[in-house]
Image (cartoon, rainbow, N blue to C red; front, side, top):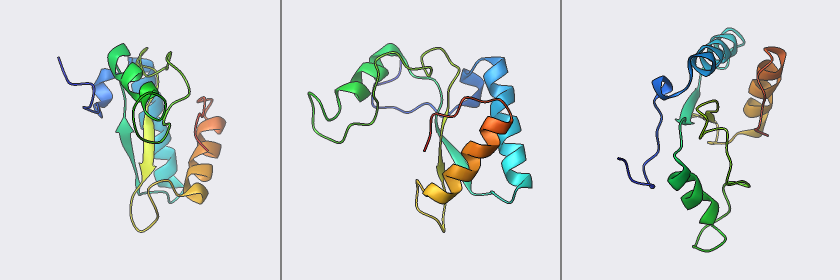
Length: 111
């Protein structure tokens, strides 16, 4: 069992349908010239979700999730970030990724 502070970035931890959707999103982003995105988290246990939910509420830090019932627990969600030279959560890049995701029929929970 992993610690609640350990982030899972393993695509194989997602359901096959989510793995396929994630790979397709990355392929389409690459075709569109977005080559510097990466996965920051895939599956979350309920214990990790509780831990993240407590952040900014009952333990120090900024709020990082709005729910105790995340799609990460169902192995259907993944988070991404942007690599250099942009900032980690570069809004322009993430808006472009979001538009591609929506075009592919992927529910976009980002920016």
